[in-house]
Each structure stands twice: as structure tokens, then as C-alpha cells.
Amino acid sequence: MISDLSRYNAQVKKTPSIVVIGGGTGTSTVISGLKSQQVQLTALVSVADSGGSTGRLRDEFGFQPVGDLRQSLAALAKTHSQDWIRKLLLYRFTKGKGLQGHNLGNLILTALQDMAGSTTSALEIAEQVFQLHGEIFPVTTANVQLVVKYDDGTVVLGEDHLNTHGTVAKKITLVRLFPRARLYKKAVNALKKADLIVIGPGDLYASLLAALGVDGVKSVMKTVRGKIVYIVNLMSRFNQTHGMTAKQHLKCIEEAIGRMCDYVVVNSATIPADILKKYAKEQEFPVVNDLKHDKRVIASDIIAQDVVERHTEDILDRSLLRHNPIKLAQALLELI
Image (cartoon, rainbow, N blue to C red; front, side, top):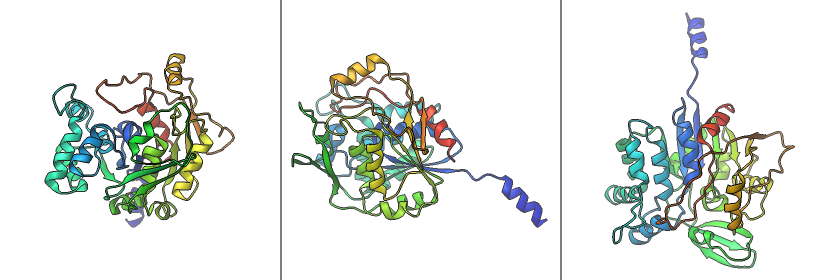
């Protein structure tokens, strides 16, 4: 009887737990591909953004920024029965005094923050209202800003300054959060239980290092049982990662987590010439894969076919080229 029960339990597979760390469109792309799979999904999201609609609300209300959290909420909404919920969360006003440029999802989350008294409570309510395929946590409950130092000695406060374009690309030498903040306790628990921890894709400094820069990340990452995978960006960003190769991106991530990644996912597909031309006008280019001899590397065609059009009312500089969420999900599930 006991042996039969043991054999039965061995045959029953535990639902794997996946934690995705980052912010913005990169994290939302990964979780949108994974949400239809048989996994326990958790998004740990950066809360250091300060531009666009998010920045305006942050300045006016003093709450944690909600833009990246809202994108994750929209990504975790059920594909069919809640398609209109997803569209509402992503809706951006194109007119209206005081409303133009604002995102409806940002306004909803800000209202919930005001009503519930905290970002974490607001997210708990939002998860119930929108019936999400997973959980979303801020990496910290503190209200932080990103501090960036360049090689010319310039120091800027605020993630929105990273998108400033000049004639010469500057090198970032230091990124930290102000004030210092601790990793949210529920984020700690999620990382410890995870079978797979996914970092990226996303802006190296504005999203990934902003999420990994909270106190406690290194100590937790050194003890996790799950495998850690880093998804390398498709393109560089001017004044952020200009000229940086895949190996240099990986080095920054591994320094932030205090250990080596178990896997590294890089794109192997050719990027269409017309897309490259658009990026070149902004002095942004494909991230060179100089990790070809690294046994941890998984090279695959992970590019989305559709090119994202930018809203004229959206003042943020967003990527035109994205990863394919389904292809990413397939590549990640093979690692569990």
C-alpha cells in the first residue's frame, strides 16, 4: 500500500514555479508567453521608473510608480475571456486636458494605491478583480529613484534621464537606488520556491539592474535551488548600452546577483534590414553575441514578426522590435 502510494506520488509532477524579474515590455513579453502554460508564475517588477504617465502620477501623488506593474497586469490577463480588460489596462488617452498621454491602467492602479494604502495591497485587489494567471510583486515596498553616474562624472537622478539622447554616447559606470531599499519579503519567498528564475529581457539599467539593485538580492540568489536564466536584449540602447556585447551585458547581471547564471538565451535570427535602419537612426544596433563558445548559451530564433508602432502621445522611447513570447516560453520550459 505504501509502496503503491509512493509510486503514485512519484508519477504526479509538481507544477513548476517560474519567477520573472525585470520591468516594462521585456517582462510582460515573457509572462504573456508563459501564462497559458501549466506553471506557477510570479513577476517581480522594478519600481524605479519616473517618466511618461507614470512619472506624472508619481510626482503628483507620491506613490510608487505603476507603469511597469500595469504592463505585467495586462500581460497576465486571460487571453480570451478578459481580452477587453487587457486592452483597457493598456489604453492611452489621445486627448483631453490633463488626460492626454495618460494610461488608463496607470490611473486605475494609482486609485487602488490611494484607496488601499499601499502598492502591495493595490496589487492584491487588482489580481482579484482582473483574475490573473499569476502573481505580481514589486521588488521593494520602498519609493526609490534610480541614480546613474556616467564616465564623464555626470550624475543624474531618475530613470527618465536615461533616455536623453546626445551626439556622443556616454558610458554608465554606476547604477544604484536611492534611498537604499530591501527586497520585498514575498519576493524573497517566491525566489526560494522557484524552479526557474528568469532575468530579462529589458533595459539593462532602467529595468533589470533597477530590479536587482535592492538589498538582499545577492544573498537570496546564492541560496536559490532553481536555475537562473538571463535573456539578452536584441538591441543596444544609446547612452545606456551603446557598444556593449552580450558578454558585457551578462557580466553586469552576474555582478548584480553575485553568482553565475545557469543559462543565457540569445537571439540567432537575422533582424530585417528595414528595422535595423530605423534603429541605426537612433544610433542603436544589435547586441553582438560574443558568447558562442559558452556552454550555457541557448541560441534561438526568438524575434517577434510584428513591429510595434509607437503612440504619438507616448513620450517614452519604447522598443520597436520585441521578443516572440511563444518562442521564449518554449525555450524556457525546456530548461525545467
